[in-house]
Length: 394
Image (tube, rainbow, N blue to C red; front, side):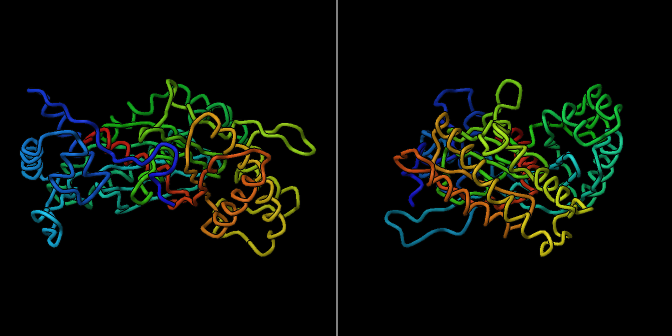
C-alpha cells in the first residue's frame, strides 16, 4: 500500500522556511527538520520541501556543517541532471536521556541524534516511590553520561521524561502506601531533576512519548496521521496529526484507554480494564496462575496459554472498537499497536485486531492499517528523548 494514498497523506517533516531577513534561525530549523525526517536529501530536494531558495539552503547547510550538526554523504551519480550530494544528521551532534517512570519500572537510556540507544539502565518495583525513582534517575544519568567523550558530553543537554499524567490518581490501584501519592503530588519533578542533573528536563505523557517514538520508527514515506496504542500496565496511547503530536492543553489529550467499549456480560468497560497487561495479570491471578515477576520474559507462557488466548481475543475486540471510535474523530490510515509482552504476542494481537476491525458492521472507504509497534516497552523512553532533541534542535 502506498502511504501517500492514506488519509492525511505522508509526512515530509519539514516546516516551511521564511524568506525574510532576520529569520535565519527559523530557516535553519526547517532545514534541520527536513534532513532529520528525510535522511539523504539533496540541496535541491531540501529547497523544494522547505520552500526556500537553493542559495539560501546552500548557505544554511554550510553553517550547519561548520557547527557539526549535519554531514555530507557520497555524491549520488547516475541521476538526471547534476550529481547530487545527500545530507544527513551527525549522530554525535546531539544526545539526550530518555526516562520512563512506569507503574512497575523505571527506564533510563541514552540516545543520539540518529535515535540509536547507546546505553540503558532499568529497575523494577511494586510501585513508583518518588525519592527512590529520582535517586535512580540522577545516579544513572551521571553514569551513562560519563561514558561520552568530550566534546560529545557538551552536546548532552536534555532529559525527556515519560510519565503517566494520572500517576497520583492511579497509585491507589497498585496498593501503594498513602504517602506515595502525596509525595508525587507535592513535587515539581522537572525542577528537581534539573537541580540534580544540571540538564534541561522535558516531561511528557508516557503514551504521547511512546506514540512519538513509534512515529519516528516508521519507515519512509512516513504517514502524517498515526494513532498509537500500547498494552502496558494500563493502555498508553497517543495521536500524531499532520506530523505533530496531539498533546492537548493538559498534556493528556489521547487517553484512548479510558474509552468505554461494550462487553457481553459486564456492560461498558474501559479499554484499560480489558486490553492492558494489568488486566491480563488480574485474569491470571483469578485463574490461580499469578506470575510473581513483572518481567514477561520470565513468565511460564506454556502454563498460562489458555488465559493468554482469551485475553488476546477480548483485547482485540476492545481495541478494534477503540480504533474505530478514534478513527471517526481523527482521520487516520495507520494505527500502531505495541505491547510489553514480546513480538509474538504483539503480532497475534495485531492480527486479531485487524480481523475484528474488518468484522465491525460499518463501512470504510479504506480501513486503517494496523501495524505492530517496533519499540515495544522501550517506546515511551525513546520517544521522550526524541522529543527533547526535537525541541532542542528542530
